Length: 257
Length: 262
Image 1 (cartoon, rainbow over the protein chains, first blue to last red):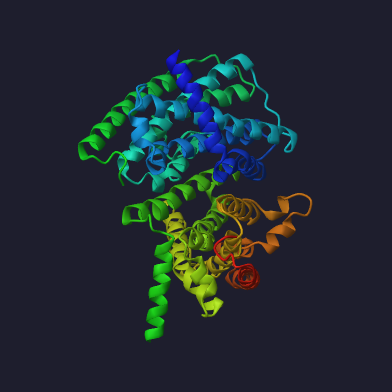
Image 2 (image 1 turned 30 degrees about the vertical axis):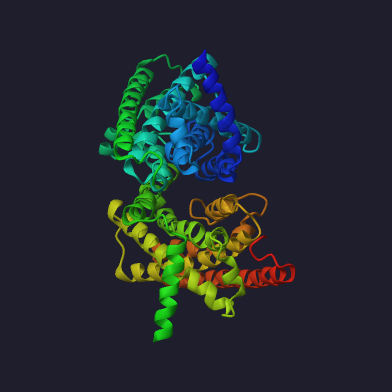
């Protein structure tokens, strides 16, 4: 109950802070329109798979953009705001606060997902032949889980790199093409496909794209792979987080630059 | 000679002034690794959209040109905003020096920086996707890239001048970058745009450069070079517009005595 209360407080605060930043408003409201418009003019609208990429692909890419962009520098942002020391000393735990913020970013990012779906269906007149809405919701939740785990790991790794701001926008692009959000992974060179197989989002996208192509997709295996990889990412993130905490305390540089 | 040295020194300082957070590692990430991933992403997207890498060749080169927008908007675009943020705007506005020299001084290294990024992007496209062209095509591409970079930087100065009016220019810069990106024709032919929106691309930077690149990559060097003349005109118009806009704001600031408080 205590954890839920803290999470809700973080969600409320994160929403307020995020929407006070103009760049965030741009990522949530305008970037989705940019993505779907670009794909609309580049892809062949007649094909089923292209429509799926224009609508679902750009919606997922926008969601990833918001989640990654906001979460990757979450620890650094606390440092710059001068609140890192206070947050790190909360009884509920520093890691839980940061993790809650990342979940909150993903939840807020769903607005961009909605914006893309509405824009694509109303303005671009694209429809998605979803085979099963029940499966779609379930697979989508697994995708969100993979987003959270990847963002959490990136937040810790980027903090450890010491150049979080420089890496912030750079890490988005490899995930765009390695995960098959906007085009199938099979068009990538073989060796790149091997790298993409360790990205949990790739497996979730594979399942989702099948469902929105109107095909039955009862195979649970890609989603299981996605869950296992996401859990692995969370474990790695937890370990990296410990390193950050110990390193910063040892060097006395928790809030320092 | 001393004046040139002073000009270059000040220009370098102005460049560093808006890139204070940069260190060699961050520069490598932001200006080499980021453009590399960005280009690869769009190259694969275009290859899927146009079915083969060969069909997408011209668009991939045009996308390498679009990498200049990183410096044009994230560098040039924030010059006035940064001056205000750092409390030095009053000196820039009130200096008796020619405004033309002041602006040129501030953007010189950003233009060179953009050109480096574009060159790296094009080399990357040649190496990774194994494109092969005659030597004169590379020379023409370089010339067109220089003109395009200067033009988009002029547009960056124009957008930057709005930094004198707003406390948060990031939204405006991001919108400007997206509009240039969509309307440049680097990803799809402009004629696909509905409601005569193609006209918008004519008045935005890089659209003529993209046409020129497409022409040169297809082997029509002279027609490509001719097309870039229009890019010079577009760049010049934005430079003149921003010049007068800044003069107007400067006048307003002097009248109202609020040069740091727009």
